[in-house]
Image (cartoon, rainbow, N blue to C red; front, side, top):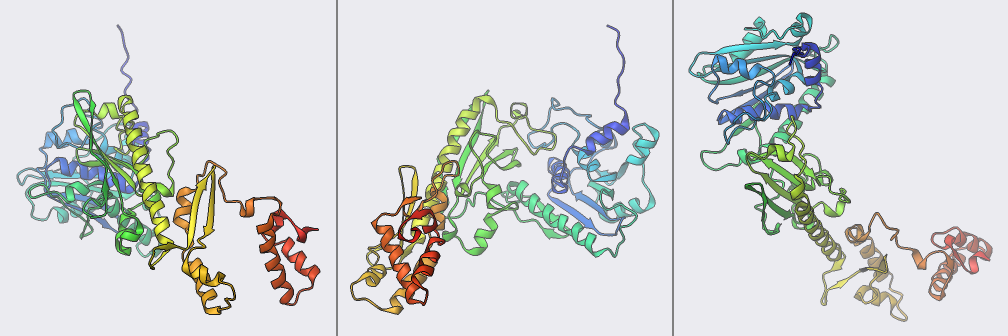
Length: 493
């Protein structure tokens, strides 16, 4: 067969790699993958503001690279997904370093050493686009060389990745005293720190000999455990080992405690970088590195709803099943294998139901008063597809107000305050189904008033008249007052 060599044009390839949709925190995480794979124990991420000359760097004390290894690492897709990788290698496509870096900067420099002999290579995208060639530069400008020198200090091994001419900051109008843009820059650093604490939590909290020390601008990154696995009130559903080819996928569901069992600090921390609603669902790990955080994996009918906020499920992908899970270039999304989807759906349904039960129970508990016997101020029921909310007439305070001859203003005031403070929001939220028309209908909904409705309306009417309104004005006011504006009675005649 005859053929043509259809090599990609460098400028077009750079544009494609720069447009893969990396956020800055995700791009930094891709660099740290390489540090972890290199056996680094200490990893420093530096954000330095200098206006349009601001820069970001990741420096580690890993095993470093020889010059041929450095050139390979800087070559786009030099190692494909089928290349053998060790069990600690977090890479997959061989483009992470380049695609993550090109998405954030116009200049990528890497300095590395294995035994005191430092080598450096640089991608300058302006050079690539102007020359139309993949010119991997052997050095860099004096300022870049000086920054790399300061970062490596006296180390005799390790790797430093430096981004300069940062996208969004390397503009003529950005100056070092631009306070607004400076705040934005360091806000990105804070977001990166939170993201890294989530993605690499298992490495940061690892046991002796396995733990990594990760710092962002000198601040130690704290691991974020989405499952609150050490909290005594967390419910663990039975762990399942699901078969996939010749290996197994470990799945464990956690039901977090409700807010009433957490301190304010615990509750705020458990919300995670994205907040409670966006952190519910599956957490997929690949070689202990978090790939996907808080997602229902596209299962039909499984939307994010507040009543499922407490459900979080850990899924560990075994080594060598990346293809089956369709792990993408950014290591930020997966597609479950067909053979596992039904099992994952079952686990998710169980976790969601249990999480909703926790909130439903909490909704009832929130409405109680501390008496003997235990009594709730509100009764919430769901029957015949409708939710009803009623004041508990057996509650001692309610009984005291309803007692014949009772005219104790203090008791009435206390009851009103109790009802205000115990509105069963949690229970209503859990019981209400957004896909059905189950909103409570006051007094049975539109239509003629029954005796109970008329009695309540008469009491309101009398209070209006005794307050100085004429009978006509009182009926007019009642006619426009919800829910009587939707019900037919003496006021609408």
